[in-house]
Image 1 (spheres, one colour):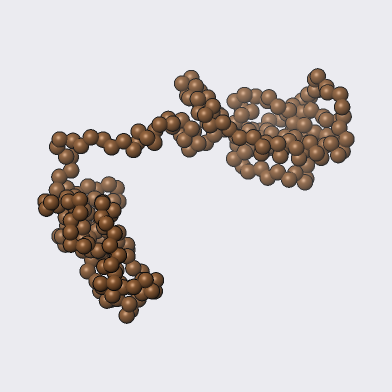
Image 2 (cartoon, rainbow, N blue to C red):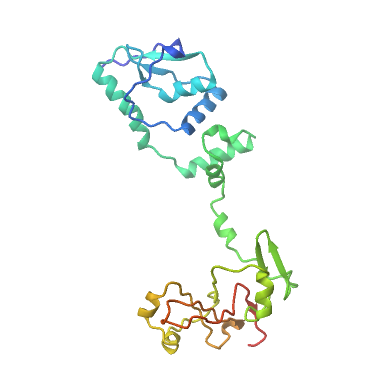
Length: 269
């Protein structure tokens, strides 16, 4: 087939362009919005391609974007030198070929950085805010975020300080003390208790057998979350016991709830 060095593009009334009724490509509203924003910012840079009957071959999204913008005309190229079979194949190829490409993130990030430094509206790139934020993150940001800051000579938080962070409360105190637990909870009744964080605590599963719990009993419990202190204070931390009852008969109906989120540094070494 002889390649044309130029294609003819004419201005058509937008209502003259006919959508293909069996277009197999779904078009979400977000896609139309992005193309509409592109046409508004950059103008028409690609024509709508139609067959000899004015039915769209390439450009369904462009037509919808033009309608969204209230445009009266659109640039149109008539592919009148293609056979009916070629028209059908081109319609599918144009949609399918886009799926074979992807972004080189190592190159995409710097492009966005350049645009940001030029004070350009990055939303005009077609990426949403979350994608842009992720692409602008420095490659070593995670490593920097995991660096532990040096301990201050004087700690900001002192024992018995209660921090209110929106709906959350954090108490610096001894989590095994009922008064600390009451102060932390105020009038709130918790629906779930998590205790015994892994601050160097060695796992000793033998305690389950000592209190009469075996794997079969644990599996039959409706709700069971146990973390038990061995009586030692590993790493200098005082850890309490947290027990919730399971099915009747598998364990006592009422068990002590002694430790919540509050964990304090023990004076005992």
